[in-house]
Amino acid sequence: MEFKFNHFNFNVSDLEKSLDFYARTLDLHETHRLQAEDNSYTIVYLGDKKSDFELELTYLPSHPQKYDLGECEFHLALQTQDYEAALKRHQEMGCVCFINEAMGIYFIEDPDGYWIEIIPAHKK
Picture 1: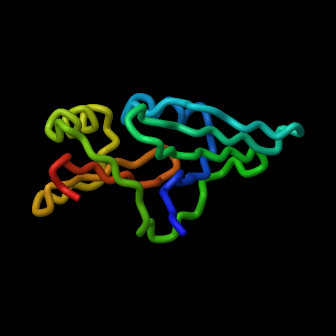
Picture 2: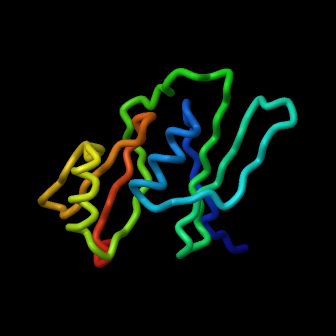
């Protein structure tokens, strides 16, 4: 039996705001979407055009408030070839929420409070 990563989900309270955030901060763009016939949910998958892994954004119109993320001890991580340029871009956008200089990583925060770790390509 073999398993392979497929996607990771974030529930979002404002789909358009989240789509804009992920496009501007991480160059992630819609690959496909699922729309409930009764409009009770919209699921949008975002990809990086470099891997098969996708970020799934689930929008539930009946849940417009922010989600309770607890202590936010979970996160998604992305690598970048140009760490310094990425950090500068994210600082200019005002979305950097934590920098760990000792580990050489930083985190950005999306509109719903999810943290995304940014790591240089040489780290794993």
